[in-house]
Length: 285
Image (cartoon, rainbow, N blue to C red; front, top):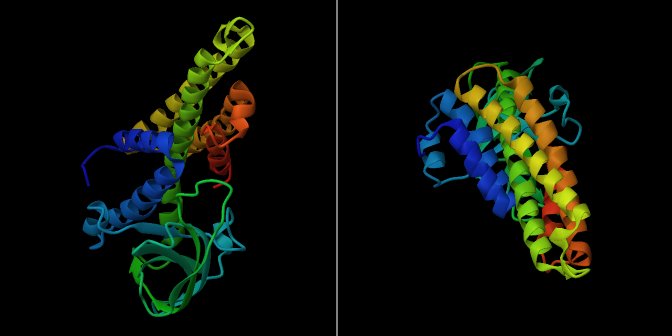
C-alpha cells in the first residue's frame, strides 16, 4: 500500500528476513502471491489487503501436485470448489485465498473468503524452521469461490505469480545469509583463541570473505530480477536463477556461520542454528 516499486519491496523482504525469515515469507506470500494477482484484475479485496487489515494466501499446492501443479485434483463446478490444498503459507490466519481448481480440462483461479461454507483449515504443519510462519492444510467441500480472470486462465495466473514469487524467495534467502554473516563476523572479532581474536586466523578470514562474496552475488542476481519485473520485461529465467543461487548460498553459508561459532553455533544461545534451519526451505519451495 506504500506505492513503492518492486525493487523497494524486495529490499523490505530482505531486511525482514534478516531479522525473522518467517515474517519475511508471511509478507511475501501476502503481497506478491496473493495481493498482486488480485491487483492485476482490479479485485475489490485489494484495499483491505494493501492496508494490512487482512492477510492473503496462495493455495496451489496439493499432496499430489507440488512442482507439477497441472496434476491438481481440486475441482470447481459452477463456482463451487471441492478438494484440498497442502502447505499453504498464512493458511490459518488469512481472510482471502487465491485458490486454483480444475474446471473440466483446464485450471481456473478463484478467490475464496475465510468463513465460506465448506471451507476449513484442517492441519497446521510443524516445521524444521520458519516457526513464526503459518503453514496449513485446507479443505474445500462445495465451497463458493469468485473466479479471477477468465475460465481456464488459472495456470497462466499461477505461473506468472510464481515468476515474481521466486524473486521474493531469493530476497528472503539473501536476508537469512546476511544475518548469518553478521553473527559470524561479530563473534570472530570477540572470540579469543591462540593469542587473539579468531578473526586474525586466515582460515576464519577465508570463510568470512567467501560468505560476503557469495551473498553479494546473490543480492545482485536478486536485484537484477526485481528491476526487470519492475520494468515490465521478461524475468522468468532471471528470477529462477536468483532463487536457485541465493537459496544455495543461504543453506551453505548459514552452515559456515555455525562453523565459525563452533560449539556455540550448535546451541540456541546464538541465532545461527535458527538461520540454518530457516535457510533450507528456500531450496525447496
